[in-house]
Image 1 (tube, rainbow, N blue to C red):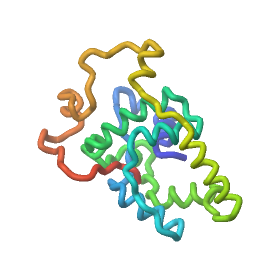
Image 2: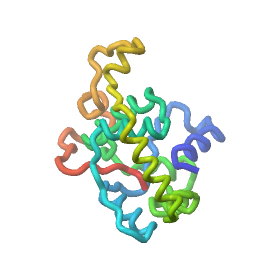
Image 3: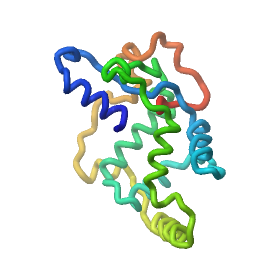
Length: 191
């Protein structure tokens, strides 16, 4: 079960001790994109390359995989916070251990489980043809313009909205000091 789900279930099983608390479940270590790539390469037993894809390409892939446009538009904001290292502030946390009494699974264990269940991992003529078909589908999908999507659906414009690391209030609850934001590659508490 995913660490977030385990924390939610843990809090629901014994709600009294969690009243008024806020949890931010993370893995036990921060992982860079290169760490994530190296783990996939190890588990798959073949080279895997990290590529920082443009947002427009992400929206094409998401549409090809039939993700709802609303979800895709929201995930783009998550990516912006990720690029600014918001999820590395005060991370990793002990929320999983505190709520369920167990350390979170390490990232390699999670990757091994998902790779073991995926029919797409084994290389065959059929999987290669499916991959080529998927690439064609991606190339033919239009990109998503999140601003146009929001306007088309009448989403209100939020006055004074900001990303997490641009919010004094958010920073005051997530950073031990204002100098914590470092330049360099973003990391995320995944494993």
